[in-house]
Image (cartoon, rainbow over all chains, first blue to last red; front, top):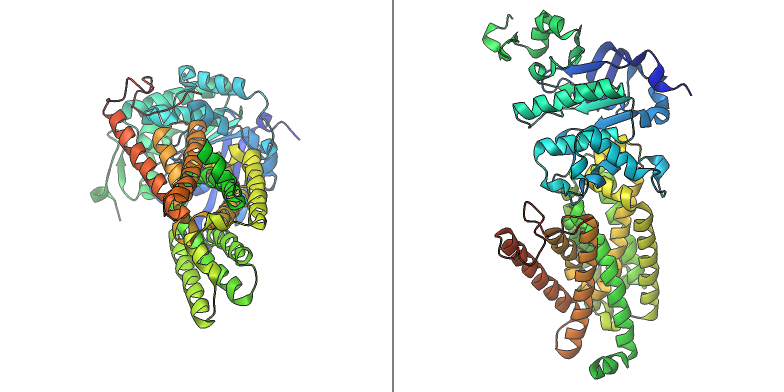
Length: 260
Length: 291
């Protein structure tokens, strides 16, 4: 197998259609994400952002179109799963679960290969991942005692534990206050450069993600626009996707100004 | 000690003691997962559905423990399958099975009038009537379930903590979850001998619930759950030997008292009144062990 992380494009999506319960959730979505790029997937609630991310992980079936990860089709997702770090939405996990921070990070090392086996180099990988997010002193602390921002960092450490080439993050900033959001995005940008990661972050909050991302991909069930944040934020396609005219300087949308 | 020797001199008490130990370990282990995965209502659902299987065994002359086990395991696995693939919430599925199993049991027992001496034992539990055959079933269930938990503990914990992530990591979440439910069904059925259809769900909820209140770490939680489950099952057995109380009721009452004490202890700790006695290191006042 090719080293997946070395290929030119980390993600290639071409005229992708995803249906859930026979209803189209994504139609004709096309974009690429280069290796080492920080891409933000933006769009209003219900736009299909999470479905797109889950499709990249092979968790929802592709109806039609191409979706390659590190040059490989989704049918070979098992070969590259360990190259992908994933951080699901905050409501996916139990916040008061009796695990230590180290235990939580260790769950990012589990895979079908570790079934009934010990995880090789477990302690070192956990410590390295915690150190990468600046939480080395939290190793044995109860996860449930952490603040929301600290829990997000611990979950980021979990997605880094398997030393992936790409991170897929689903609304990691949801529920965090503005300083915590900025601190998290700064950390992500530093990690991207240091570890040469490809980062794909889903967010409905384009104002907070725009300064950190190299490119933005705007969808609302179908492809609207894709490009540098400065271009996307000025595009009329953005207004169309959010169904309101966006004042990107103040970060507010004004429905009254939407041209029907 | 004399009393203990006196108790153990009886063959039925030796078998009851062994059964209490095995069921105590089984229920405490499953209780750990029941509480973490929020499956408390499933325990009640399985035991009540098992009544349909038990009644079927009684009226057909088959072993009611065997037919009840088939119903219990079948209910547990079907609940998991239907709620996942049939797009019906788990509690709705349990509610349907619960009522249907009970209705089948009542219909069969009423329809085929006869003398069913085992029925009362299975409804309310009678650990003193445990046979060698029952012990073999309990022992094999215990061995299989403990082996399953030992082999897949880290995966089961991950499924309880963050199922979405477990799926994304490529773990066989569906088969492992169904196996966990099957283990739960089997545990409920073998424990019916101890506490009966009516009370057995308490055995697979309370030990884990007490442990969850007292420990912030899963290792501590597992140990506390085992200690609570074993203390209650053995305590209940001895209480029922000396006082005119059915063992199942005695066990559940002891569990309820332990739960009340745990809640009180946690409350006192959260108020800072027990700080001198219990871990000072936890910034939010949890009673926990260290890794």
